Every structure is written in C-alpha cells, then in structure tokens.
Image (cartoon, rainbow over all chains, first blue to last red; front, side, top):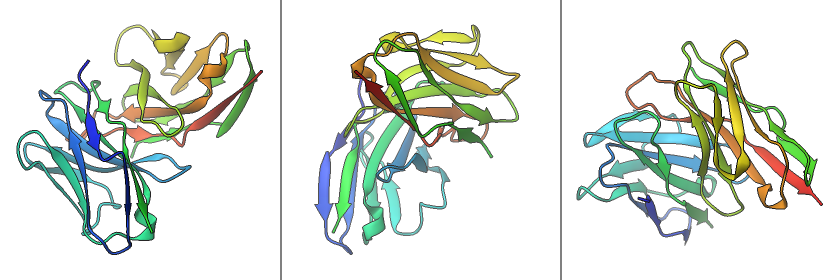
Length: 113
Length: 115
C-alpha cells in the first residue's frame, strides 16, 4: 500500500536555528498538508498546498513557516528560526481528488532546545 | 467553523469489556467523519471512516462507528477490549467546504485497558 514518507523521524535543533522537515507524499495525490501535535495535545492543522501554492493556512502558520514542493515529489516544511514552543510532532498528509483518501506519514518529532 | 468534541480525555475499560469513545461534531452539512488511532510515539492510523451510505461503518481491529445525523455524533465502539487497543484515539471531520478540505481533529481520548 502506498505510504507517505517523512524524514527525519526525530530532529533536535537549537533555538533560533532553521529546520526543514521533509515529506514524500503519495505520487498521484493532489493535496498536501502539514499538521502539528504538541505533546499531549490535539492534532492541529498548519497548512494545505494544492497546485503548487498554499490553499489554506491556520493562524499558527506565521511568517516563520514556509512550505515548498521543489521537485514534484518532495513536500517540505521550513521553520526559519525555531522557538522552544515549536517542539512538537509534525505530520505530513496527502490525498487524491476524493475527500476521504487522506494518508498520514509517521511524523517527525522536532525538539527545540 | 467546524468543531469536534470528544467527551472524556481518558477512558479506562477492563479487558473484554465494551469500548465506547464518544465524538460529536458541529457542521452545517453532514461532513465526512474519521477515527484515527495513535500508538505511543507513532503516527496516525486510520481506523474507519464515514462518507455516505450505510451509517454503521466497520473498521480495522474490530472497531465500528455509527453516524447519527440527528445527534451529530460518530461514536466509536468495540464489543470486547483487548490489551493491544490501549492507545489514543482521535475523531476527525472533513467539512466538505472550502478549497483545502483539511481535517479538523478532536482533542483525543486516551484509552487504557485494564487486565
């Protein structure tokens, strides 16, 4: 069964550093998402991406965040200057044109120290 | 705006007992509904989903859920709990509106299964 692949599985970074979280969505999917889950809390929507542009973003997704699909297969989330409160599990998801075919990756646990 | 409410952040059941995890949603139109399970330090695994048609949907690991439009609910059940069911469970909604159709998640219910 096709999978959404996220790398790395764990990342530790110092406050103020830039991080890039990587995702390879399922190849024939059209919509791409990033979600965040702070430890012990709910899964929160960050941003969606369709047709090579952001289609929606939440209030969490401020100027420190950016997304790219640089080569038609990878989908990246960049945090320019990490803060302690960015520590969380970040999930990538993708779906085809249907409204029920979401597939989530296994997540990247980001720890900011 | 869509919202999802999961009553009970922690639920404990004995092994072999009925599991009932509650989910209510608010939506102007019947949405698509999902239940995900998350084992410790792992990702989100789809248990089951409701889109259209039969309101009782069956999923993996013996779980099922019933969509009740009149009650705006989508409760998750399993007749007999197993130790391996211990995990966090999230209800999620696709509102079928907006361009992105992103999922909105409930706060989650941590299920503990007692021997």
